Image 1: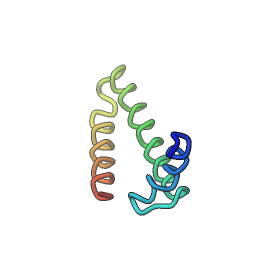
Image 2: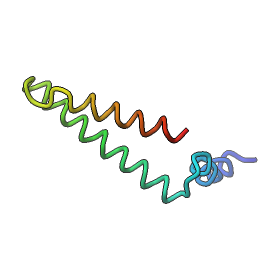
Image 3: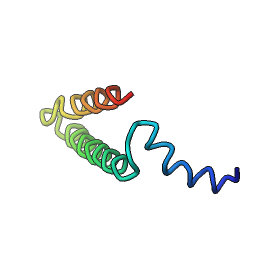
Image 4: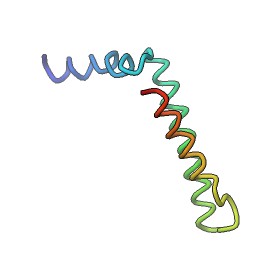
Length: 72
């Protein structure tokens, strides 16, 4: 199988490995990316103003880890 064929097949095989369709996997991954983006923003604000968002980023990352762990 050529590298291009393997790459294209990954659009089906990888989402299927977690029992999702391509678009279901896209929705999950985009939601995950958004949550990480917000957690990163909270961490950035916390770095500049320590009393704000003291546990927001770490709590969100723990919740995301649990979400990933439940999928496998």
